[in-house]
Image 1: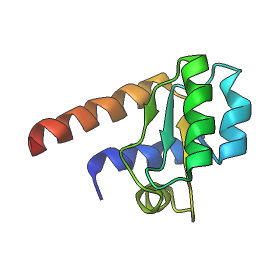
Image 2: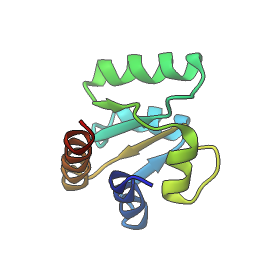
Image 3: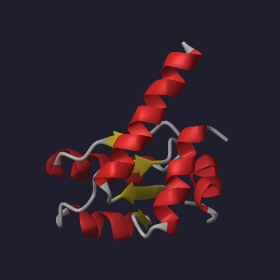
Length: 105
């Protein structure tokens, strides 16, 4: 598992992770969400719904992982949509992703 995914587990354990399409969509308007995760293998309907709402509320969307990777990272099954609600965890995750991309490239 990529190290960046460890931050999702940390977010879950600390209560800073929202899971599920409906939960995330209902929380977008509250402006609590800092970073949104959308599984790369989510249905087109789910992708369309989430991307449009995220664009409207100006929330960054990460589609770098499939549902298996996202689910494994937090110990749940069939997760398609989740969101980090802590700014510090968002920054740490993005920094790790940047490091991973630089290392791969």
